[in-house]
Amino acid sequence: MEGKKIYIETYGCQMNFSDSEIIVSVMKDADYSFTNEMKDADLIFVNTCSIREHAEQRVRKRLSELNSLRKKKPHLLIGLLGCMAERLKDQLLHEEKAVDFIAGPDAYRNLPALVDLAGEGQKVTDVILSDYETYADINPVRLGGNGVSAFISIMRGCENYCAYCVVPYTRGKERSRDSETIIHEAKELFEKGYREITLLGQNVNSYKSVTPDGEIDFTGLLEKVADIDPLLRIRFATSHPKDLSDRLLMVMVKYPNICRSIHLPVQSGNTRILEKMNRKYTREWYMNRLTAIRNFLPECAISTDIICGFSSETVEEHHDTLSLMEWAKFDYAYMFKYSERPDTFAEKKYPDDIAEETKTKRLQEVIALQQKLSLESNKKDVGKIFEVLVERESRRSKDFVSGRNSQNKMIIFPRKDFVAGDYVQVKILRCTAATLIGEAD
Image (cartoon, one colour):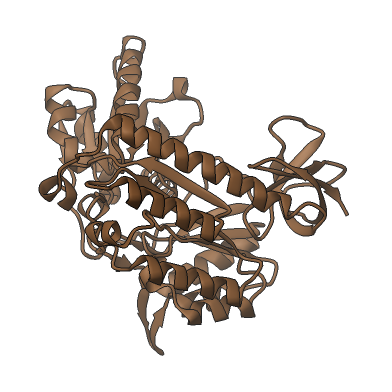
């Protein structure tokens, strides 16, 4: 298969997209080439997500569609990668024959060998999770980006074991990359013209690396990356509320190029449900952390994750989530119905006892409230001037460009002669719940 073309589709979180860039780098080093055109591919990778049942259903449907391509290309190989690999390996590889090989998140270095074996007709898997793999020495190939923004994975795995979450079982133990490799990658990206990087981890606040000068935690790492250049914007995701420290907020105050935006998943506004979820904080603790953010960084935008209909959630407990949303006034939220995942603590110990129609109703209430809150937040920005990093041409019109401000809000404004990578002062004229519209000041 050497010299053949690979095509990759990615589902799920930012971490998966970062992994896809590592995968392409590994394959290029083994003399494969990358194509953006599926019809030209000899090898298709599907990088998967298991976080919700809906995500798995999408992948299954896609695998069925991809298999129809074999009629035109009998020698086409299809590989399943990522978080679905361990859970469904036997079913997809042997029973359904939907794929030719399977590789878990820690097996990407072995992909060329797996592909060779699959090309010989063997059905092969490598889903062993590692205690040390971070891919720190691999230089990712930046895929389909704008040449302005990039992700840097700073750690892998998770050991929080939230009751509903499959990640510790699909991505393994938490381990951090060596800080020098992260700083080097960030410097290299800046030198290549990138102006914004996002530091990625399941819980970035628990990052720890040992250096010759001693241990460095996430706050120390963030400071070192921010020191690279004032023109390099820094974002990070995701923070766990139990670990968000005042010291981190103080570093954000010190560095204007650390974006004024924090994603802080709450999941529920009720302490009993939070305890049942094994989130390791209370409603009051979460509110304390939001108060601290607002005290240190009054202009900071806060986004969150919310799960509706977790096991035994009552109407009153659902209303606690709504009341917390009203109090917090989140700028944005990712909102979901509870989806029971196999092998999690909740699946083994708690009944999925909230009716589907009840989950749907509660989710609709949460979405409606967040739409209102997002619109209120954006209306407050009308008349303000923000520094915007131009990312791309607007999807709706070639006469406009789009980019985000420090608060991670998307802003659209007339193109003029601006190009991706420019910093532009933009005055906001109007808004929707999702977008700010303005003009260069």
